[in-house]
Image (tube, rainbow, N blue to C red; front, side, top):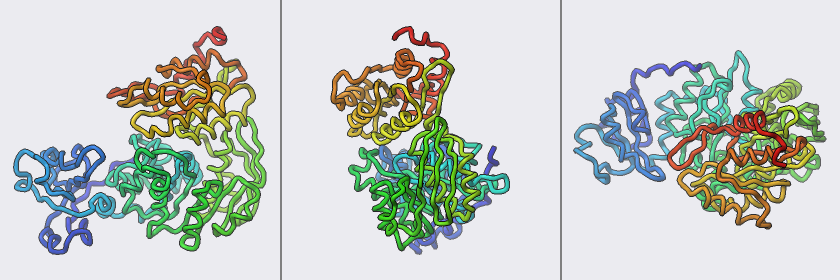
Length: 517
C-alpha cells in the first residue's frame, strides 16, 4: 500500500499565485496561508483553497457553498461569484478571488502546493489513440526495481506498478494528478509513466508537470464528439510534445500522424522513431535515431523479434499477442534506451513483460474455444485485434462488440465495417450505453454493415458472449472487445457488476458447449 501524504503545515497563497495573479491583489493576500487545495467540493477540508473552474456540464462555483461549509477559506474562480445564484453572501464569509484562464493554471497552482513533485521524478508521458495503457505498463514493468520503484498514472489506476488504485479516468484532474505524483515520491518512486489523454491535454490537466520523455503511439478516429475533427484531435495530442521542459520524444513512424509529429519536432527534441518495418531508410530524415524490427516471427504465445537500434542489434522473445504489441514493445525499448539502459538488459526486461489486464488477455479452457478479451473500442483497434487473433490462432474468428453511449457516434458504423471485414462471425451487443437507448446504439452500428444479415444482435452482453461460445467450434477464437479490464457495465444511472473476463470463463466452464450448433 502507498503511504498517506504527509500533512502540509500550510503554504502561503502568495506562493501559490505568484506570477499568475495581479501583484496588487497578491500583496493584499500576502499573509494568508492555506492547508489544502481542491477542485471538488467533496475533497475540501479545513482552511482549503477551493478552485472553481468551468466544466462541460456545470461550473465549480455551483458547489462553492458546499466547499465553504466543508472548510474552504478561499474560493478562486475565473468568473465572478455573483454570476451564480448562491444562498447568502459568500464573499462576506471567505476570500473570493478571480483569475483569468484559470483552468490552464490549476496544474501550476497544485504543483506548487505539492512542492513540484514531478521535478524529482523521471516522468514519461504516453499519448495516442490506441496502446497508451499497454505501452505505459510495459515501460513501467521494465523500469521498476526494488531500489527504484516505478509508478503508473492511467486507465487501470494510479500508484506503484504493482499497487494501482482505480480512478475511473485516463488522466485525472490537475489537483488529483499532482497529489498522485507527491504520493509516488512518498512511496519511494524514482520514475512514473503517465497516460496522457487528449482531454487531459486540452483541459490543461497536465500543466505543471515536468515531463522528461513523451511517447506517441498512433492516431485514429476517437473522441471526435469532443474535438470535432481529426486535425483538432491531433493538435490536442501534439501539445504534449510542445511542453517547454520536455527533453526527448519516442514516436511511432508507422503512423502517418507520427511521421508528421516527428517532422514538426525534429531538431527541437531528441527524437527516437520506431517502426515494425525493415525498410526504414526513407524515415531517417524525420528523427535522430530509429529502432526497428529486422524480422518478426509469430508463435502461439507471442513473437520472436530481431531488432536494430542505434546501439546495436539483438533478439527477443515477446510473450505478447498481436503485431501491434510488437510496436508497443518497440516504444518501450526506445524509452529504455533513452533512459540509458544497456541494450542487452533492455531486451531481457522486454522478454519478461507480462500482458496488461484486459489487453489481448487469453481465457483458455481445455476442449473449449479460446476467448480473447481486449479493450479495443475504435475501428482501428478492432482491425488490429482481429488481425492479432488470426495471426496466432487457426480456426474461425468471432467478434463480439458494442459501442459506448455518450461518445463519438460517427465511429459506430465504422466499427461495424471493421468487424465485418476482419472477422468470420460478428455479434453486436451493448457496451456501456450510459444514458443512451442501447437498442438505438445497436441500430446505428448495424447501419454500417454492407450485408444486413452480417451480424447477430443481443442487447444483453452476457447473452452475446454465451451465443458466441455455444456456436463456436473448439478450434475457433472468440474476440470480446470494448470493455477489457472494466468490472462494471454502465446502464443509465446504474453501474452493474460485469467483467468480460469473468463472464467468459464462467460460460466456458458451464455452457453446454456445442449443443446449439
